[in-house]
Length: 172
Image 1 (spheres, rainbow, N blue to C red):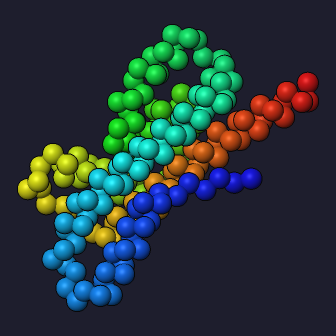
Image 2: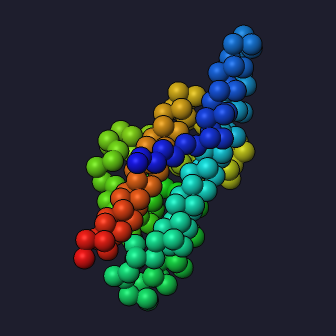
């Protein structure tokens, strides 16, 4: 079984923008305004999905952290909320390392850079209305695909841990 994580709100926005492009001759003037909202939506949806994945892991699969000392679990929970907001690549990496998941080989360096650039722009856009965006619609679409690839890998890795744990319980 393979779990596919989709950023459904971002996908819907992409579809809407592509439909708009067919109806409006000069979308270039609107695009910066649309992308300002799009990058905030992307960050929120990444955060939401990451939180859901971690919540499922902690709630339903406590053995995912069964070898961790309680003080390490407490430390993780205290820092987790800050790391999951507007999730930067290195913060995601730290979060999933807690569950012994390594994402080093999931994304190519250029994918990490595209994702990171968009998240950095989100910080700027959200806090400075005069900040001009430095990414295109194509970059946004690519970042959505990268985010889905990363979340899908994390979900499947946790699911594999669950499956292996159950398999090991039955083979003993």
